[in-house]
Image 1 (tube, rainbow, N blue to C red):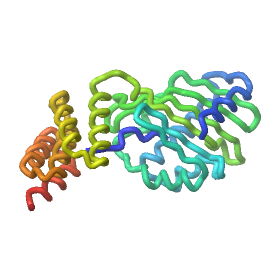
Image 2: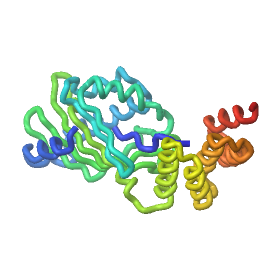
Image 3: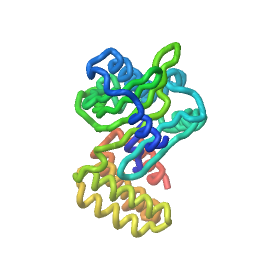
Image 4: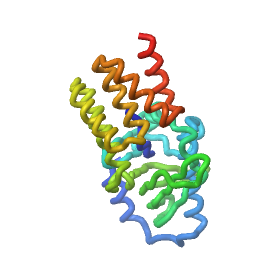
Length: 251
């Protein structure tokens, strides 16, 4: 399965340049810091609940509003209010996976000048139903102050975890390259890569799911069913796998 692993809610140079023009840091534990971090947290919570109306209340709505996501596997950006809203409707489908109320902020730096504020922070995202950290994000956010409070004008989030050298990232990279090959119609090569991923990660339901998809595209029904069943043994809640298996078994 090719899943959206990093949903990180433009111009990086603009953000950093503006931050250098603003006054020295305010007190780390000050009320302004608390207010700005609350805006970031509440905005993210609305995103993961697909609450479009609430999410919009935290932003400056103009052609210069932007957000970017940077990680090892790619870069995405939306510039202008219409693009931001369109991306929200497309991407905010992760409700239940992240408990934003448990977000922890560390290494916070705030600079402010009049109605302009800049905040840089490490965000620790926790899994729903658990306080275990599932993502580490480094964020840069510019705020403008309006009559009804501070609003986000620009935001950049960097998925720092994606640059770590570990088994999880290797699995994800192999899976991603496999799907790149599928998109290029190089099915047999993709299957070879998915099979290697299964060998390296024998308890990964997602690796088996991807291998099953590769075999299905190659017309190898027996192997596809075998790997989808293995994926479901490891993760009975793999709904996409259930649907794919049901279709194969009816053929």
